Length: 223
Ligand code: AP5
View 1 (tube, protein in one colour):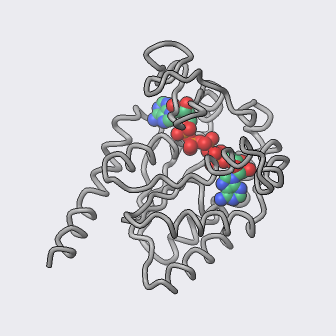
View 2 (tube, protein in one colour; view 1 turned 120 degrees about the horizontal axis):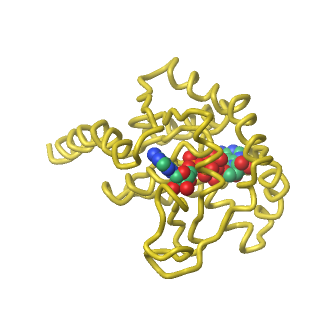
């Protein structure tokens, strides 16, 4: 199963990609998480990406495409893409590279979120630097405040989650990433999903779209 999850900053891409990965046993490939890992490890890519991320701008396409192509090649059991593609150029390169391997994206889901909820969600987000689990101080708090439920690691706030940077990220989204939704809509069905509501309801809506796809793929592989 190869799925793309689109959405503005704070739409819940990371939250729901993790649930999709757990339910269907596919890899959760988050361009933002991979970049943050590269930064933490002090690699060349991490150093090059740092200033763009801190400003809420996009990291250049060539760096991202190389990084994500490598992650996709390694995900032999399928994947859900989180934060990639984020420009029309990235979407075109992805399509070309999958077509060359005689595959393609099975489903595109677009999480639609109101601008009003984005700021509250992002400034309240806390994440686990070890396993990547995402919490919210009010909406999805961990069992013990400030500590990851899964591995007990102290939770952190992302440096790009300040109000000023979030505004830049939103502006970048409208200018460079919303056209990706139109790019996909011109060639296929895009499953628009209301992501303002309760996370369990949003997840159930996504699973209702993905379950039949997974059943169909299972039937095909048994035939
Ligand atoms: P990235 O890490 O991808 O950030 P983003 O797209 O801005 O998305 P977020 O991670 O902020 O939000 P999300 O939709 O995952 O929401 P989440 O589930 O955490 O990218 C960071 C940077 O890396 C970019 O700015 C750029 O510089 C660079 N980059 C990454 N990919 C790139 C690419 N392809 N090209 C170029 N540059 C790239 O949820 C947010 C909060 O809300 C959480 O606290 C969560 O608990 C809560 N929440 C989620 N859903 C709900 C709900 N339904 N109800 C209540 N609360 C909820």
